[in-house]
Length: 372
Image (cartoon, rainbow, N blue to C red; front, side, top):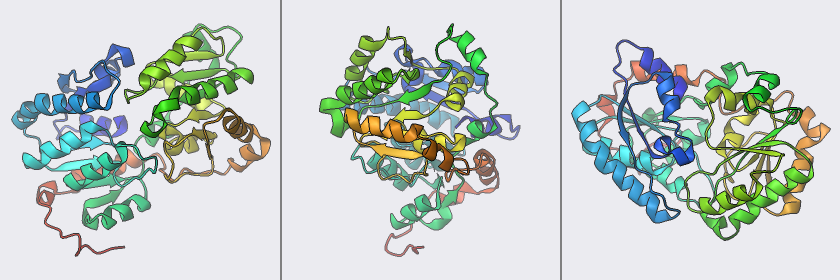
């Protein structure tokens, strides 16, 4: 969201504030609030909501902390507009606050759909029903929202805002990256791995994670490996990381400076795991994205995405395909369906020109909404 936030922050007619919570304030997950401060954005409130737990219950409790501790600040600031993005529990809280306080809201990345059975998917759709306006990435997402009973006048196709920084960013050189991580001759070629737990895969999620690492190790593929997010099951993955953290093939990281992360991404041979980044962003770099397991299944994907099962052999086959000359050749003319690098500007112009106050009341009957 930072490209859009930058435009709002620099507009002298807009008093732009940010509420920061969750993993942004956790040293265990990289303390990324430092990146927000570095960007120079005005933080109106920091709320420590994260519990040191590995259960679904902790996510619900964290959501309740966010609701209770942000409500008074939002009511006092009384904004003309609230913006939130994605499918985590925080967006549901903010959509509800906006509705009860009569504040217009924009839900970014609305209308997407994943068939992995994870709670994030219905949270996204529930948030959309509570929100005033939707900024969506694809026409497909707009159609889905209209099928859900949303008036098409509330839905704006902007493309994926997170792509803007990928398209416009000039990466550091490999030599500069090696100096940053104090690397010698290794890591001349490397991959990027981001893997998070999914409820349906919980019993064996550590095995699946290790299957990826074993494949990369056996092929001697140097890899930057992200720590998992806070979803239940992350402790299993952390134990696997402890097992491999001295392995010379891997650099495990919690959070990286944006310039470092995007430079790694742009120089990677491929991305592997189950992050939405592989679906939405890797195509802009024309690199393969190997998606392992259930997460992200059912999402629209460009031809750089390879879906594979979680077994050692299936992952191996996926890597073989990604590294094949034929597959790389097919990506040379690839254009990312999720955006062209100008999404933040589109979203910003919509915000400047739209009367959101007139869109607060959602009186539409889903039976009467015109389908397209």
